[in-house]
Image (tube, rainbow, N blue to C red; front, side, top):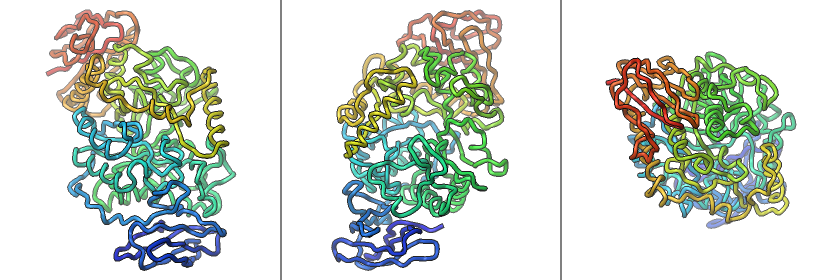
Length: 603
């Protein structure tokens, strides 16, 4: 595999490497301190390269492509936005303080998803660092960052990036991101970076002028598919594999979240995802510690996380949308769009038992059978959530769950998430019931593109029956409204919910039956709207009761439990009562409150 980009070699020496297989000539145009235009040498695979002196770190440059000046497709820094010059970066200059860091095991991850631009008022890495203590105190062990690849303008979710190797300059650029990762590791927090290998943004995207990055063989929701199996696909695959390793090598990122892999089409003998997972596994062996890949997919396909020996892609874990959909539909009663397939209490129970709710059964929403069985897949191979950027931001009004359900329902949902046998993901602000919307926003400069995005959003919402005019994604006000209100966490129900989350995470870590992600040691029963869960590991056992209905339910207890550890009905959680007994014995008749949540353990 060939490394691409501008590799600073020290002593003002730099090697420029670019892949452009359809071009016969390539020149690099260097700005100060010694302006010049120099031809690169081409090899038989279409890689152009040259080593130049008098190129200090910070030097700006373009490539000459067909007579036009273009940024480097593997630019490490774009200080003047997507149309400006690329900039040489000396990665060895940064003094890392995390030399003793060995990462967090996947099974121990408690993930917090955040967007740098809206996580703080300032919207920078520097400002985000100041809030990391709060996340560590909450009980978070891994921070997942929405994409930071350079996008047009200063506001965007990040999925419109066009320079996958460059860190968004308005966030703080390469130096800012390294400081952020270093600070996370200092506090014991792993860093997961969201990367986009299924499409590229529309504005400032010059990659097609260098390489056959797209193919007409497939279509995606974003247009042409990335070329993973057509002519010249080897170089395209190398481009994205190198990108993954780049974040791990130069930025010490612990894991990558792969955006929407159902938009990655590859009919070759070795799927791109398998090639990627093999490369990361090799990198992990070199570094003598494990780096992870986590996929977002709506395929419900076990092959994504199966080991290569079992004909899988070898991805370490994947998001399970079914868990989110099952709980959301049960608590909100929504039944439009993909929520049409959910809403029954049995859906939540199956998500707990198996991971996928749709494992080959018929989907009314898709009008076909969907998924395959996940019964034998390890629990740590699933990431589950109550909210995330998509499930909030792709709603018509971008409402968070806190704006849709009662306070009691929020506590119930939190317990169901954090005490599940999977890796939990908390969306920024969820822990204290943030009510600011998280709306899709962007700052493109092309009027036709801006209007096309507006039109596309209207069409997406129509599938859910939302007919009104949505918030304008280009408006700066839409962006500003999406910022967190950190001051809310210190008062009223927000404070109580924050403490509730903190207690749940503390219990998840300290009780072996919860800390061990083992579905074999789990029994589930349903009585009316109550799901009862028994989990056990070694000498530790827990008994959890969750009432997803609006009426109290009486159940006959079958377990001897000596210690109640949390009850959402209690006063200090601003509960509505009555509270469950402190101890329970076999034969007791228990009354579970509407939307009540309670956990017992044996000691």
